[in-house]
Length: 445
Ligand SMILES: N=C(N)NCCC[C@H](NC(=O)CCC(=O)O)C(=O)O
Image: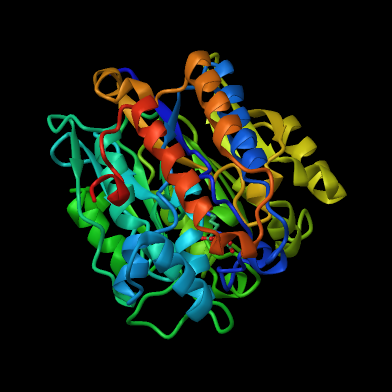
């Protein structure tokens, strides 16, 4: 059957800011308190979506979570009118206010884990929103993200939506950022690689920064998605690279169809991992396992450039392209490596650089900004059409961003209730543009 991959990018929400909320994510900490430009962030994201759709690649859009998250602020004991909730939180608990204002749902690689119908026991596409248990500003995304996924993929005859895993450290789940699938093509059953940072029954774990994904979470998802155990591998991230800022596996490895590009320090007991992948891959097209050595690039250069957070996409006329952050052009060794990768004998023959600086400064590169969904033609027809990128939707969203978004946001602005009202108005309009219904709590009260 004819399958295709659709990249669903997260639309950057109107409250994008730099709050230093993610311990273990170097960029988030380094850029804390910088002046943010939400308008530019959203336009940079839309530009990437348009570029891919003009390359003939199917492109989708996922609406952002509503911020501030008043439901969470009220659960924390702030009460009265919405404006009172904001001003009380700004005085008593600015850290929680920042968490409830984060636009972090833009990084939709963390929105969910999705298994295509060619991998699942019942032939449906399975979705599990990530609980993002490790960080409070992200853990509060799961419920609304679930609503948005249901409104985007509504047809229950082809799509199955699971609840997020229990909110407990044992089941820390970061979604597709820690999941890759290797297959002959999108429509063939694939080898699911679940990469975890910590097995809660083992002592092998990072010493400085937290491991966000647990093996227990990955196993639970593979069970609910009815994956074939013979086609599912659980791989541990190298704890030493987590301690160097590799907080998700997609900061050190990227796979697409029969190509897997990863750093030589990506995994714990890497030689064994490579042998397992080779042994379990059932495709007939040759598997390209491309290991980037320390001599090519250090882990530090990988984290600074975000080279592994490029999107690796199959082109309509064959071959693959790497959609890389423009930060890769600033580091000589990275540029050199990319040039040699293009020349070498593998399907990657194009590198396209994108300016995503607003997102990058919070540790979110091209691959963080998109959720991959492999779909058959029939399943693609069942997707909410207002969530699929066209020139018309691009123009509408561009106008919408220019109308509603600020071009400057700092922490002090979060205490001003007019930011809340502006955001709610913008998002209410967005749900009409994207025909999502009432996915936000503020639309229900
Ligand atoms: N690698 C992938 N797939 N996603 C990147 C997510 C970046 C996000 N940054 C933040 O949440 C920073 C927010 C702040 O500090 O204001 C995170 O750490 O979870």
